[in-house]
Image (cartoon, rainbow, N blue to C red):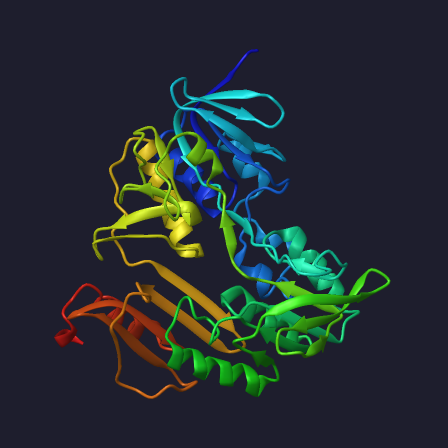
Length: 394
């Protein structure tokens, strides 16, 4: 079998994979580049899928990072609708699901994750959705017009964004979260409680400390959601957002170090000098915070892709800034930088208010993160600059 040879091979057509290809072309105009993606769409932005796009406020054509003609002009080959099934590091070869074999000089793993599924009674009923792709969002927004009651399973950022979108579209919407408070994996309990009250004031019902134990249906379509507190919620549609399972099987079977993602340096380089890793699956070293981190958010994925692609093309860049994530829920603009998980204290100089506030997350004597809601960007930048400094500088 003849093997196609690439100087740069990118596995994954999401944010990281796309921006890696753009960075490669910035520094290497000639080296052969290919992106392998299991999706049939050219690379696109997932951020609007839970917000403007699902609410019919953004057209399909505006989801894509670049037009298809851009990839042709830049000679970035797109191998769509296929996925890699194995990596032979010794021979620098990747095998695809159609038995093609591709060789590489530099390889990027940007395989992301897949939605974690609920394994409860009747979880295969029509009208139960998982949101990860354009096609998922299209299916959800088409169902909105024929629905009255919606249940969102999972109170993380995706769940809260979808719930706010469904409520804004006029549906009676309920969030069911198994943890004691929504957004519990990202922010503190007090701020979470304030955001929960904001959702409820907009009309969204929220159950915390509550587990979904099954679904009820009629003629194959979902009609209700059974909870462990004995209640059954009416539901014409259900959106499940309970996290992702990382697509690390390729990395693991190739012998790369995998522990809560693939272990990489601040250069996004794995233990194999010719294999880079970016985005959701990258467990990267942060020089600023002096720890390994893994972040599932747009900005990190974009910057990871840019840095990994640049380094694959001969640069020597480091991801040395505080990780950033954002979320829009109703008229709340939430922005966070740094590490909001390992804090020992939170300091705020202003009361929580829709008019805007900033919180500083402290670990020991050091500022490790900030969270802002509806703050001016100049104020956010000023607060962000204090990450890594002594708390006395706040």
